[in-house]
Length: 478
Image 1: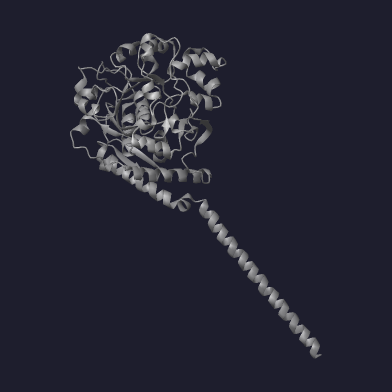
Image 2 (image 1 turned 90 degrees about the horizontal axis):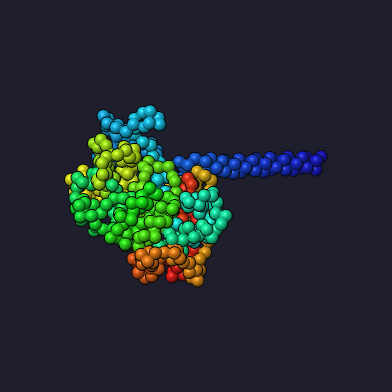
């Protein structure tokens, strides 16, 4: 009897122990599930998982807002979130621009994504903006598809005859990049606005390390006190070819860069001038301002630490689009352009010089510092990767879609063709294309080392991320 009672007691203890163990296991599983749920639910909430990035961008937005208030000459910035803001004109602004397509006057407020703008314009500081032979060689469709898009007189959508395409491009096609990021410290981009005649900026413009001008803008004693006399680069559209010989006369050192495509008129013009000529390697991205002036800023940013712009009609109160050297004519949307240029200034991309700004002592302290821009840029990258589900890959080559390599033995031809005229044979291409590495400014050489000898090119189209990247195995190939 006693033995039976003892066995029953042991059995009850075993059942009790098992129940305790089951309860512990269940509680532990619930605890693990709760922790995992908390982690995963947090990762789906960008405001929690990217709190630091959002804080950095929110602070940057606040600084942009203050900058616009101080420098915008009436414009105000209204923050929507850490990336988006709206630039507004004061009530009562005269909307003088009538949009024929939509049958209404232009709006007085514009929405911008500051995060996308930072990513775009910081990328331009690192890319090559001139078409080169190495780009066509490395890009998978470089010669067959892409080269054909840049030759108007080809008469075909593809370069089935590569030799012909090479011949048509050779006068303007350097083997490797002739210009380099951070090659100049200060650059002046001079637009063609009639506002230039209201202020004598000439001496100030000439004090820059390089000056970039647009299309057929004259440079002579008549306008010297307004626009200066220095001539380094000129960006021109296809319609300027026939007049460019006279425009470039007397300035063989001025580099002429064709904005879009080469064609017969350009080919004939090139034979008659000694100036170096290249083709702009730009892309079409939707933004808040258009025209050759915007492309000139892209070109300048790819070579210069500081970009000062003049003659872009960014002051309030104008009623018509004018050029300093000709009669008024219809031009680009002025209010939207003015808003976008003001945004770029408060993003630290450019510095605006205009008649109304010349009346006050310039203070650039409210423009973001390079350190502040870098922090915002890094935060924008991480936030974008988080939103798209990308992990890591935040290095300087994260956007390289196509890779290529050029060894020290790569010795492509200097731009030019076999049938060049005597004038053309004296062109100073070698100044840019055979520039010794040691002759570059210290900051440009340091940049080259930081980039591990890699040149970056944009891939055409509206994708911000796609780049062609080419590594040079020797600094001689810079």
